[in-house]
Image 1 (cartoon, rainbow, N blue to C red):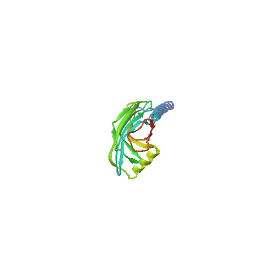
Image 2: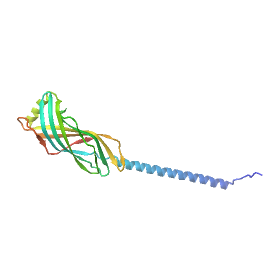
Image 3: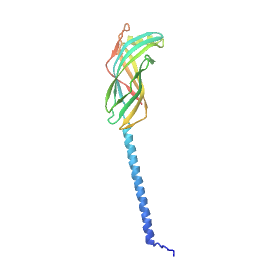
Image 4: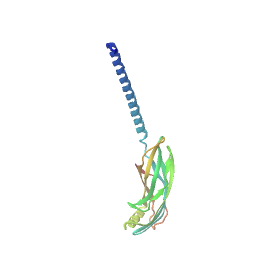
Length: 209
């Protein structure tokens, strides 16, 4: 003999109530997860928008600057201060190359700097020897040097290019292009070109990422 189950209206109501309650629990769990995710995204966004590193030329010495158009020989010693202003973000520097330019013309070949890691609110001194042997230059460069010598000062551009990665905890970002531009102004006495020329005044550089 088969059994026939007859559900009362009260039983159906109780079943419907249990279904609604389960849906509410799922919805509450979803909203809680979504809220936590949004809060995490906002936190990461705040952390991962660090301030750019700051660079300053501490010292620059021109040991040689001989122009025999259309060729140039140069030797420049450079000391650069790199600062990480961030309190919770470290920086990895990779593929760094520095060179010097004068009046828009490159007067040294690129000098490779070793990669390094910079901790929170940390500063590092970087040194580089920039050299150019027989570099081709415009015929007008010698005339421009004479004009600067008459004016009593010489403006030298220092370029630093490379890549950096941000580090937060154990997370490390992808590589970002780093471009640093510095201008060093040196006293340049009228008369015969005598080296070395030197600047120890300190010059803040512009940084773009």
